[in-house]
Image (tube, rainbow, N blue to C red; front, side, top):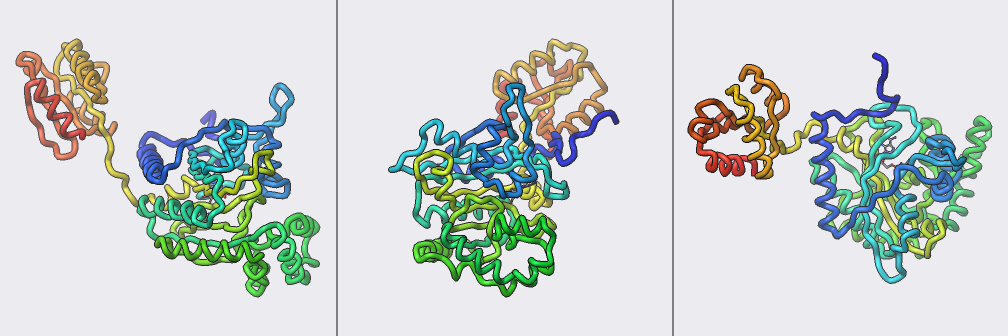
Length: 416
Ligand code: AMP
């Protein structure tokens, strides 16, 4: 084989597209119910945008970005996440005002140079929400509730919403000192690289996968004990709101999230069905980011959900059959009659196709099956002679010969 898709990328083939579309429409339905509007941003942005937003100590910026110089010598990066471009667009187009909230959703590919495995790819896709301009804890609850309902609507039963609060900068400064104190014995035996990483961002220790450290951290002080009163109150309101609105959750103080821009609430939804890469999504509050990126001070909360992981979690669930395709089967040499039938169907808004040359009928039916056709319409010399069409239901195998007008009504009814 001369070429293969680049490592860590996936082709989404026609027979998988139905599952993607089902997921996309489930997402769209729910976010529209809550009054969110779609926003689309470019695939690439200036590299500086992601350094500014994610923080230069974040793993994404340090190791994972697809960065290159364009022909004008500008440093460009393929977007590794969806939030920073949305914020950039909101600032640039003055969509933010002090007195109102914006509810936005997006669907985007993301690019990260990671070691590929099931559920982790170099090009992946995310759908996400950004609720901008709301300080209220109920905004956090809304975003988590929509996320939870989305997974419920997809039929993913076994999910766990894990919530934490990482407070404000001041909280993190005092907490980091306590954390470093707790791990100091362990840290002095670590590599220079680990020490440097810890030095840059001690909170990263909390999402380490290293067994010895995980064990040690079980006894570590909790960030929740270091929250400023305002953050503690906010977190209490979030938990109360989640309970009131029927969103089950657990508090997990190991959640700190990989991006530096979060403040107060952070959360993840985990599925136990999808293997090692169990996080279906991640989100939280990021009250300082808009200002940090040059916009007006704007509190905000959002979530990014991995599409591929949701698809893995739903792989045993068949999406509802949505094919509306009609295949016209030629049982005549008269090609113009076939073309007229195709025209008639299309002018009535009915999606249809046919083989170009007259293959045996059995082969044409087989092809219709392969295409997932909902109906077949047979056009033979008898049908041409008496102005009728024979409509075959490809699911129930029922067949009816009707006047052309009645046949069209029958087709519409079966497709609706
Ligand atoms: P993050 O932007 O890292 O918070 O990621 C949010 C969600 O996107 C994760 O919980 C995953 O479901 C998904 N995700 C992130 N990176 C990848 C990746 N490389 N491959 C597949 N899914 C990903």
